View 1 (cartoon, rainbow, N blue to C red):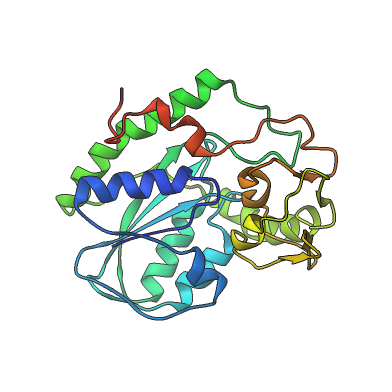
View 2 (cartoon, one colour):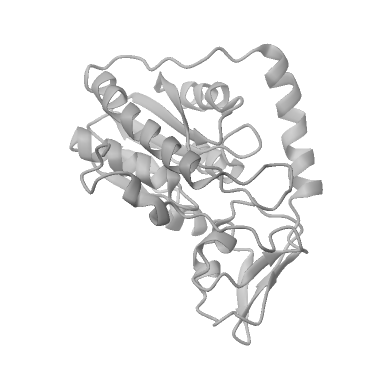
Length: 263
């Protein structure tokens, strides 16, 4: 069973690509996370958790969901992380979660995909050629990952140093609280009130009021689902996102063939 969360399609592409190669099922966790549904999930095949990387680790809402949800049947758990190039301490935290659940951690793979975080000027926008290259590179790695899982082999990624853990663990919650507020989100006059932003928010911080989205709460995950998936590009984050290209994986699916193999 492949379990995944994906805000803009990168992790969905990876999860569905592995599902096709392994003859397995890929389950989108968005609704379960939104509804705080911790119903046990059973699988005869190994569990494969596919997740993006936010602030050097798995999204905290996904970590919380995994800790509370029983995984029954097969005891092997693999993790596949997508990021803009650095998955941080995601593997260390994943191993801790799995072992505390009494399951067997089978390692992780880190895959570099196009970055979707545009609510900061710290990250340069990628050229189309680089976006296509990353998608094709990741696509080419899925075959080997699937083969290793079929052979019940552990996946091996780079070593995570102790200083990375010591820096990230206290840094992440502070950064999330201070820099991931909702105040600067806004819908422009282009908004058509479709509600897609609210339906796609994993933390339910968006509600539609008089046909327009309103962001509630002190902070959110900054997953970029609302901004990137708006069909009319009506959502901005202050003036940081103005004139920036929106990214959704589906806009670049042409980079690979329909069967998921590299062109």
